[in-house]
Length: 418
Image (cartoon, rainbow, N blue to C red; front, side, top):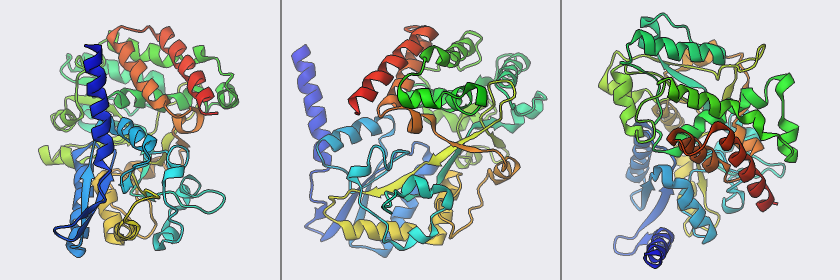
């Protein structure tokens, strides 16, 4: 059986690698085919990219875009492709334009759209030598998404602190008689649970001046018992039935329907509204910054790089790939993609009428902090956050064991990356 599993895994890896082994041209039709891999999972996000690709193909009939949305398998597939040095022609760097994918991407600094790059993203996409690593389809500004109907119905104000957040969850459960899930996760995808640990790590360990462990994390001397608060709270939520009962099997495609039916109070990060509105035009959602954890702490947005388009430096069709990105940088498409993903645009040449604009304006004075894992954790830790959260909720790990495991993996991956 072990031998059979080894053969199956080998065949799987080979098949993934072979996806990119074609020369990207359709000799019978004379077309160039560009492979495109993206991390987007929401249907409305995918439709925004598909629409842009269709418009490009209409304007450039000699180029075809072969887009792929692998979902939770994205990182594993890209790791295999990096190891084989056989990347997609176009791919999403999803927060790792420089650190993880830097040596695989083409320098885009001579492209016209660079002059319109939002100044808030310059340090993320540009290095000291002026290399530009990727094109930003939008930019992240994450916190919590909440259902306005649910909070209004039960007289709950958007929370500013973690204690208020817990109180809000308990009120939703109590006042709805369990009919509304206070905090919902599509936990079949580990990244959904990892989002909780990653976002709340910032107010727990970074932003409060008396609880700032950035130096310890950077030097590798951090005491991981100080992280246990987060897995403890996540397990407490499960024990108090503040999470969906099917938290470990729920899938992301279920989210729009449940929000449209007012069956969810909160979800992590920013949820696209389009697919929810299609099911219920009267649906209303809001977004708030991540609540403060320590007394005297402040809320913070978690942001920076979100969905991008990078060009593989060894693509056989560099001109076609560059042509596609320049096409995306047209103001009408900058606006359309940002609005389609319900996030601010990455360029300044267009103003997107984003559904959450009022919320972003309301909290305009709240500091935007980078994602915790992108600054303080070595490559590979995103999987660790998601895996340990799944094991916690399945009962395989205690909160203390989550911290121990996270700390051990932190040290191993940090040493591996030196």
